[in-house]
Image (cartoon, rainbow, N blue to C red; front, side):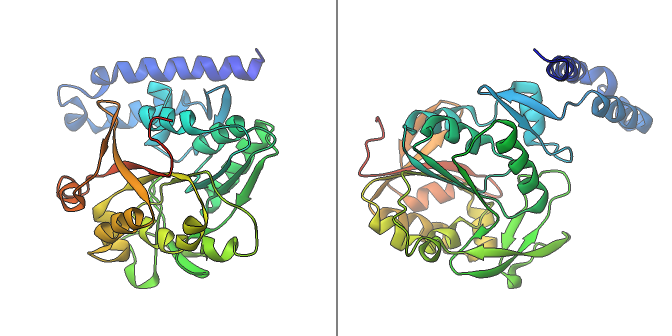
Length: 308
């Protein structure tokens, strides 16, 4: 083990120890009565916060600004445990995988290792900082079967707005210009419809993972022809009715599910707590079970058994 790797492991151990003693710093309302304790705790925690973690035999560099997904890795060593295990289980040598909303490459790296040299991974990430870290992670782990695509996936080619979160680097939100996210800095990024991008190519995905903070409806609209040309397909997607309604209209969560079903998918809800799949028969019931900003993840199978 290199000196750098030892340093990362020691920092990670110190970070987890500090997290376990959080109440000592902030408990019993001490943080509210003496705000300096919050500042002190945060400073100390950031000193021991490593810049990368080892996940599935990969080194994963994380965005230093992120306080959500990164902390999950630091504390628990994994993120979305059941979904990532499901994703891993369906990947085979030679597969083509689309990672839409690749972030820094958690799913991309696993896909690259599973599909092998004869497979191909297309990693779509439009946000500049995440894209740069994604690129570093691909290079760091020595993969040559990943194509980095600096695009937002949408229903048409052009540009869309990217609204940035200041502390959750997985919560940057893509939107059309008329649906700006209030209170966030935003800038334009290139957008592409997959039907257009792969119109003249014999590229057919075997697995698609999609997590783009409510913009999934527009992305799905832009890949309907590709899906129809694909004989079998597995799609894992975040389903966030609130975010989808804000990004693409009140009816879009229902329409999203109806498009999936009409395209030949059997749709299942992923339950992280029970580590199980439940088939979705009633779309309205699913939507009503996710009030406010609640979300879930869906596993969708077209001409593929969910037990495969």
